[in-house]
Image 1 (tube, rainbow, N blue to C red):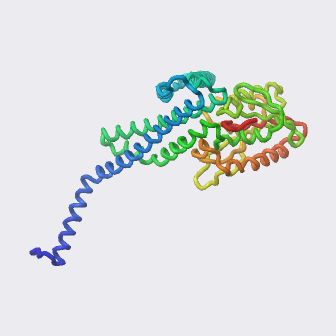
Image 2 (image 1 turned 120 degrees about the vertical axis):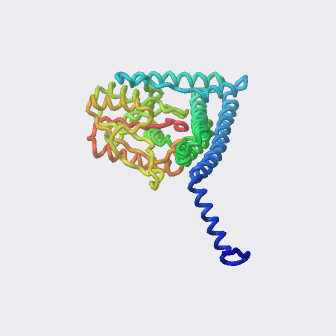
Image 3 (image 1 turned 135 degrees about the vertical axis):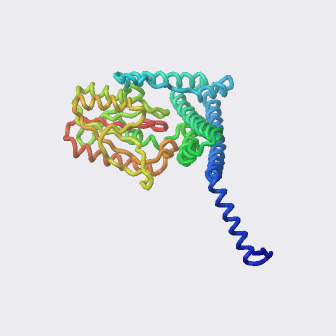
Length: 368
């Protein structure tokens, strides 16, 4: 068959040949082409992460200069701070591991606060807490960037589709978390309430107008009459960026009252599922507290020892809401939580009983 330019048969033949060539290329090089497309996508996200990370570092340095009035440039010390790491306790013999972890976390917290005081000598205790939270957010951004960069370089070096595919698949969630920490930086620096402060905001509203006293560690308590019961309300000391140690506080209060506690109610921000509404309030049972588990362990030990019932109320939000300036929906949920708490107290206790109410979370921007 002769090919005549312009004829229908020659065009059909050319298209067929190109289809065969394309099919053969896909068979032999399809995976590699797919990998290069993924590498390009990860590379673009990595550039964006680097910009977010650098912006976070700059904001942290600017906040320290503005609030702490250092006599020397804090940039070098901030860079060193961002590279700090914490090594967990040896878990080969699990006996006593909670106390070891508790000690390590205490040392870490003290060390980071000391570094902030050196960087920002003019800061008061509230500002030190806020600046520490700011630097923690910048540290998280730095860590996210380095992990993504590690897998990007490793995948590019080895030309491994599966290494690149893993990081490419989780990139949307990684970017969402990074953007949340980025938006949180200024909130931390200037003491604005964040989504994780839902629990302390409820506690602060309940204890408003009542005298407070300090509890270990970095927590405060007020004694408030609610529905004919005595409510011992606990939260982290504010308005600085602080989560306190609710485990130690609850332990102390239970021991002070010699186990005469009828009920413990914990209020915290809870991670919502996609499709659920931000600010939705739910009830449950158990120790509603995140973190490494030390505080939850201490609370559960005392509850078990004295056979105290434990209820939980959570305000649903995603990770972005938790570390970003508090949304109106979360603020509006506070009154709903208070109604739920009062209903639980009425239904599950009798008049004259003592109950503990703990507002778990970061008290930044939330006083008492």
